[in-house]
Image 1: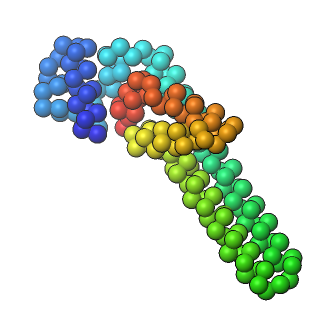
Image 2 (image 1 turned 120 degrees about the vertical axis):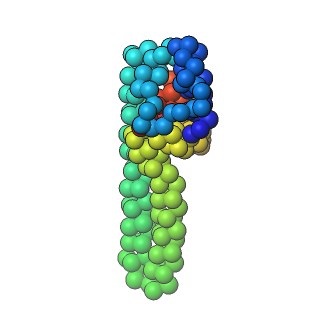
Amino acid sequence: MAATIATIAVLTKKATGDTSAARGLCFSRRNFPRNVPYMIGMEKKSYRNMAEHVRLLGWIHIIFNLIGVLVAGVVFLAIIGGGLLSGDAEAIFITSIVGTAISGFVLLVSAPGIIAGVGLLKRKSWARILALILGFLNLLNFPLGTALGVYTIWVLMQEESALYFATAD
């Protein structure tokens, strides 16, 4: 966070010629200038567009990973239900372990995406990093994960995205 504030303070100094902003890095969340993205050359339109892209990306991550949670529930019920239908005590025991393990793994994989989506909606800087990591991992999940990964990387690797998260409350 301090490095981000230092970068913005230097950019503010370059854009406005005001040395008081860069002196001592006096920015906090309370006295951070609201118009910094505009002072350093980011147009209001591109700032609004970035806000829309980040909001959309957050919702896509949440929905994509909630589908994973739904799949985990269906897999759990299907595998355990198959063991219950057999009526064999050993089959019930084995299918309950397998169903729980597979569902637990899918839930474990889906949870970071939901967390990243909520963080993106709340403009948390850690969510940008988490979403980028998940975006690179999603590239391997063809075809929907690849599309999500490409869109995530495209949105969050832009300079406007870094400024959008740096100026968040």
